[in-house]
Amino acid sequence: MSSRAAAAAAPALAACAGLAVLVAHPPVGWWWTSFLAPGLLLAALDLDARAATGRRVRAARLGAVAGLVAFAPMLSWLIAPAGVVGWGLLTLIQAAWMALLAVLIRPALNSPWLALVAAVAWTGIDAWRSIVPLNGFGWGALAYAHVDGSWLLPTARLVGGRGITLLVVLIGAAAYTAARATVRGVRSDPDHDVERAVARARIPFGLLVGGLLVSVLATIEPPEQIGSLDVLVVQGNDIRHWEQPVADPPLTITTAQRDLTLEAIDTGGQPELTVWPESSIDRDPSTDRGAPLAALVEEAAAAAGTLIAGASLDGPDPRTQRLIAAVQYQDGFHEADRYIKRRLVPFGEFVPLRRWLDWFPPLEQVPRDAQPGQGPQTLLLPDGTPVAVAICFETLFTEVVRSNVRGEQDPAQLLLAVTNDASFRDSAEPDQHLAQSQLRAVETGRWVVHGALSGASAFVDPDGAVHDRTEVFTRDTLRRQVPLVVGPTPYLVIGDVVGWITRGAAVVLLGAVVLAAWRRRSDGAGPTR
Image (cartoon, rainbow, N blue to C red; front, side, top):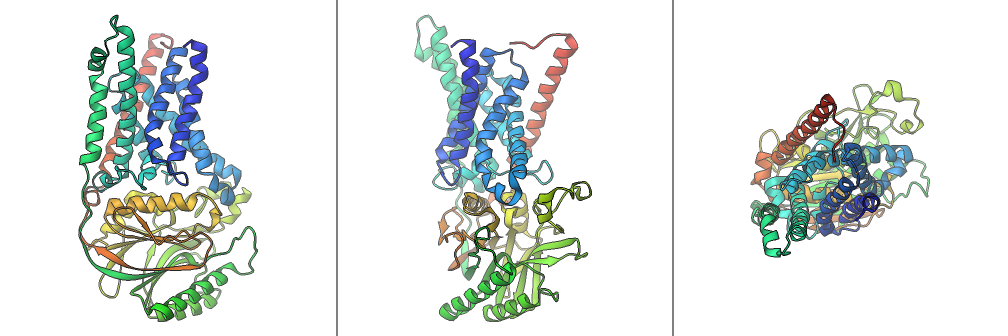
């Protein structure tokens, strides 16, 4: 292929890599395409290396192309609540991380260990973008594509979601590098001996076989289940707020929550736990302004016995601060305990640098800054069962969920993931959000009660399978005897070791790239082919 043709084909291959990442995730859910993405990106970098001088900026452009193609449509649900500017900025940040990934991989293109470098770099970049900038945003990690039908999913009990990402990239990149090495070996051999060419590609083939073996062997059965809990989930928001204005949405929604709760209890008796998702009580019921909601909560909680409800509470300074909480009510309007959300969403739940950014019109939707909760916490039910809570996008942060399940004393036997996805309208967001709960269920070995105020709500078992899923923007209830789990998974004990190691390795790779560039500049040498 000529240099000009290679230069033209490289961006197309990079775009295909991004497309493979996109369709691997919900709502398409072709998880197997995630194995194609690493090879396509490496092929794009290979072609670019033939056509150009190998400058890192060209590699960065290819990575950015892949990132834009993957994340721009994947995150399009953000346009409704945050506008085109918010969606565009977040997309550019994710594309910038992909650009950095390509820069880290580029120097190792001719190394027999390229597949391992790519796997470590990709996983490390995913780990870094989950915490930087601000609170990070690890949406679209390859692991979330594997929650439905992939043989890799059980490995999350040992190595977590990061381990799945590492194995996916290792297998995909090793398949590409093994094929590339074989083809090159055949072309360079006068006899075109395939067997000899394969022998020369033993390292890439070894990485491919090793990755496949680990992905099959590193599987562990979920922990033992003991007893069960009768759980009722109430989904009461059917308001399509962009189509039908409602005079008082908080009152309308809490009223629906009360009505559905009483109907379900009248039909099936009192459950052991009733769950109301995030924003079910969207005004502080302990204030005069929230008094009408308090009356509704009292009636529902009296009938339910134990009610854990997502609530928006006033903060220490009610004018400027609020708390996003899951409040445990016992036998009426009596607060037994509460969990305060720990990991907050910038520009959605609080505004960083508000003093300088208050002029930006979309930020009027965030008039008060949410205050984070302090440390992990479990809620104790009357029978002594500890349950953990994750609110909204906390399901995205594996360490928050893990530490909440571990608790301060006894580990939680059940995980409640409560959210309100109404802001994202009819989009792929509820499917992608549910995938996070599926992965957290496998990592922790717990059943997850995924309660979404506007849907989709579901029960998720420790194998990641979804049960009793509801439709979005419907009023509905779910009820099930949910098994309780006491034992830990290895991941619950050791944590995100793969994430920490690859995060450090990514820093080392970046240091090597910077050092090599500095040495070339110091030596007065131009970029090399």
